[in-house]
Length: 325
Image 1 (tube, rainbow, N blue to C red):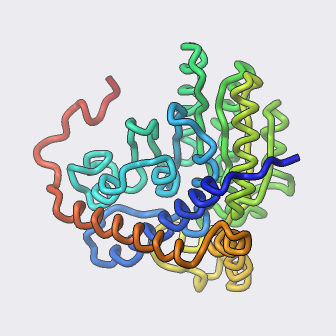
Image 2 (image 1 turned 90 degrees about the vertical axis):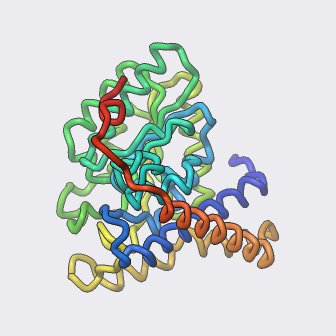
């Protein structure tokens, strides 16, 4: 039987989804000013996965990500001021203004970085988990991947090795149906993506990625499996991105997906649905929502102000900013 989730955890899930949504909506608002000079891949519509998974982790655990990393970085506790500064290309950014939206990193919260090449973070995360097991640490490493990653050979090499060595790693697949503009049905045969991980011998779970409560519960189950020394887990979560693949706009007009498909998924908004559920349970009130909105917007405004007032990098890039020590 599923254990009831504490009200404070439910409120935390809601606030973090709300916060990430408002942060990315601020990016949508500011991006046309042409001061953010890096590509941005927004996670609007997919926030429940980042929040639900990260809520199930300990501070000592590690998280790695991909090109659509904003939600993962923020849910993991990444610094908002340094986040905006990075997107603005400033020295005070989390990657010193040299990485931009797709290369976020914050070692202070064990966010070990995001890289945009499809699948490229997967072997790195597997290596982190291997090192932790070698050092006999009690940590879990999480790697967020998209549905297209399972089409890469390195995914299969990584999860095969992880199962062979019983590594403490959770592969989280955000299945949003599309690789850029190509639907899953045009890239893969009809079968569950999770079946690939299962075929390698990994413990697998599937769930609704737009339901933060379900994501949290499944993540907890997967993480507990890993902490018990039973090897890696694979979590496939269905979701949908609202905005264009890369950029702040909508792109339903270019023909690769229909308005009806978008509207059907829009009804599964992870923010609105969680809000309605918590209101009906009496866990959340409209007054609390207003307070959370105010808190989030104030923090965002301060972070944007910090980013805009920060200095650009000066001089040549030092080796300490490029190569591993």
